[in-house]
Length: 410
Ligand SMILES: Cc1ncc(COP(=O)(O)O)c(C=O)c1O
Image (cartoon, rainbow, N blue to C red; front, top):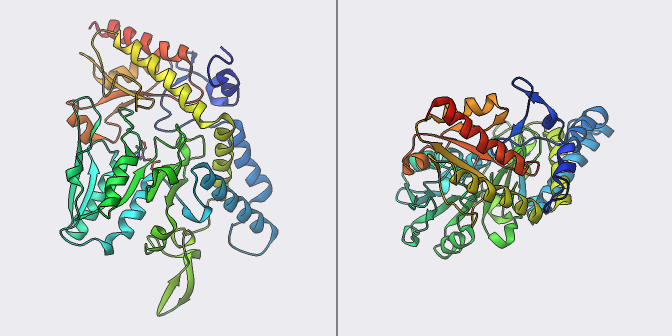
């Protein structure tokens, strides 16, 4: 294998201890579920371990050396994450997940939305960027509208849905089911012309493509560290500085205050205003190492590698009779999430047979139920690719599907 494309996949795989595990009757692990959570390289594991072995103190609390070092590590991670997406450190809020980041913006927006206002989302959203907006609409009397799915699985960006009543547009940067990459820049331009704000769900975009928030011009971008080689439990909210300043606190308590009296409190400027409790500095140390790792590889190379795996998977699955890939069948404006159904076999059965062969895929509606409904399926199986996946693993997926067909006699 070695350096056969833009990435030296063999060298990358050596950094991921879990990839040498044997599973299910001594099968090699073929991990095709990075869209759910990515695996972690030793560099990230070491950073977390080193934090606990050498620096564990409560960041932004106390005046001793360990607390000081914890603060430096936590704030250093913020600066790294900011640079990774072209933002300033003061525009990065650490949350516990992409989901919490969307909830933060939607809850904190409650007071600025009135009955009759419109919130625009899309039918291809993950529930994390859908249900919070439904709830905001219910709380405020606003109307929820959405871009629908076109027959080819792409988003039908109907500009007439953006009106002077639209207050916020929330749209995914990349579908976690079909891999579709909507024209977020174009949607943002239209939204801004109408005076609306834009939140992009970057959970599947930021780990896989170069992202520059200044070029995208979105007001908010959310993503999760655990899908981009970082530890579980740390999410990111990017917000333009003035947009963050305009939002009231979401969660309250701890160090997000300025002055507390029994009668009431005043609050810190962002990002501290939105960060409650002792900061998750170990997770931040891990995420900083993850960002270093991806930066060293180069996000253009990451994207090119995944594009070649996706093209291979689309070709291989197309050749299997009875297999239908959900969404576009080319890699144009499409990332490395390949959901599919196999005629005559329930996705859970496909998942189980693949698992017996060591191939880990996700099955179900992938937290995108309306999208599945719109595509005319209840559920699907989904393979997602990342920097450590190989073309041989794509073949293992295709072989596994054929084996399942023989097994079930379809
Ligand atoms: C497109 C998309 N948005 C949001 C999320 C939610 O991420 P998290 O569970 O880390 O909050 C996911 C997770 O699968 C996702 O794929």
